[in-house]
Length: 457
Image (cartoon, rainbow, N blue to C red):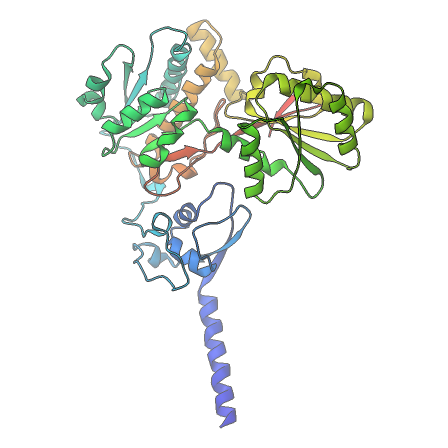
């Protein structure tokens, strides 16, 4: 009797082992800005299955976390997954765990025909004023992208409208605009909001090309694409370069500062990164240098974030830290904000010797052949030098024209995997849920080097 029970147990374990061998898993390391929903879409599985397999009681995941992904059989991938009842200890989040309503076709299956002529509309304020300077250059760069796609075999219709000349209501309600697959523009966040109101129930994709404040509309329109990453996204890009296990991490801010510094501290707290605070008034003078020396010299390495966009304070803080590096040999790695790139009072030598790291929404690397080719073509056609607006116009138009060309009118199903060479803007779109639009999380991080060159990380 005991032997029979023993054999039954052994047989049970063998069956379980065979089942485990039949069900294979993929190990996925969570990357920055990935969500449970986006990972499930990548592997064509149900987010609920990932949650149950990894004992997730909420939809929250963190960067660096290892998730087991069920590797489905080929015949299972051809069917839409049926909704199953969640475990009693699982919290069901509607946005993240909603079952797919339709099967997403593989991106590679789209083949454009001769009848496929997508309509792209551009809404720009061409009237010259202090507010609108640069949009002619944006349009010129855009035209070069259109010409490039024409050379690659794309047939499309380009419509251009002057937002300042045309009546917005008449324009937005017109049949001409309503037939567009993609609308690039308008430029400003308020105008974007008006446009979204007209196209809320339309498949037309709306692209905000320049204003980072338009990010407020991402949660309300599923076919909205926000190109300019906000300050929070740029600041978060610095986290991968911090090493609190090797160096003491400091947040230096102006006394009483209530905009940038609290956001930086919250970001570090959310990622459980330990840091030390140091705040001072810019009028304190030389005493600050001595205080910093006392605090920093006891550590073999120091990583410092100056959490400020006040040019006077940043200049003073950089000067103090440069003195400690140059004359006291105190090891310092310095991290700053994107707006520093436009400051004119910063000591360039200090930036390079402190090896400052800055996150930027846009940066042109003139050592790249694609940049040199664009500059040469722009000079030949327009007899002038391209501006940041020119580069941006090319990048935005080329990216979304390629999306239409490669993936068709429903390119949003594939946009998270689309990676293209660009001139100044890195594109990496993500969405939090099917009801949300897409935010660009692409950031260009530059590094000032001691040899007075700048590298693109």
